[in-house]
Amino acid sequence: MSLIVGVFAIQGDVYENISSTKTALKELGVEGTVLGVKTAEDVSKLDGLIIPGGESTTIGQLSLVNSSLKTIKEKIEHGMPVLGICAGMIMLSKTANDRIIGKTDQPLLDLLDIKLERNSFGRQKESFETDVSMASINIPKFDGVFIRAPSVSDVGSGVEVLAKFNEKIVAVKKGNMIGVAFHPELTKDVSLHKYFVNLIKKSKTGQI
Ligand code: GLN
Image 1: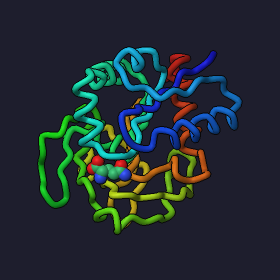
Image 2: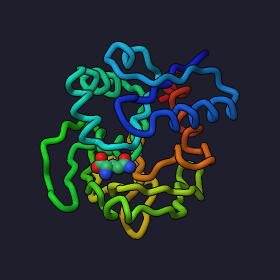
Image 3: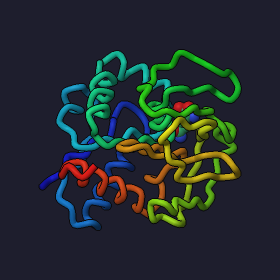
Image 4: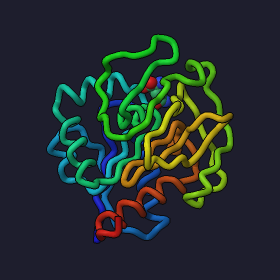
């Protein structure tokens, strides 16, 4: 079995995620290909997708224009595992309000039942690194890199909270969808990418 893992390559931390995913596959001894994907056609071939951190308004607008957003939504609805990182978690959400300007009409996938506050910890200059714990998925200590990060202000039923920082929810999971507010691709530790690869493997063999 060989996995095809895509990193949505419209904008943001594309190459860093390709590199972390390749390392994760290697460390796990799982066969697979990791590709940057842009179009609906590229997306349709995937077993799993990472939507990277970057700027959700840009990722949303451009993916709306090239119709890849619609295909991503359909694939996730049919069970394809997805890891949404920072802007990627915003893309997965049902509601995202900016801390300062509130609600906008930015395109979202509207799949993960969470309400988000964008730029929840402040702007670029307030970016920071701190330890986060995702004990329920066996990652008790992880270097969380927060860059203009969102936080989750409300979760719908069935959404598991994986991590909090300062009482704010910063990582969630529901079924085939994982969302994290911090950037796992900017640390050497590929535990979360490994967890995601295993989720894709399980999904491909019908275990989830
Ligand atoms: N603040 C960005 C947004 O709202 C996300 C930042 C990031 O992905 N590092 O889209």
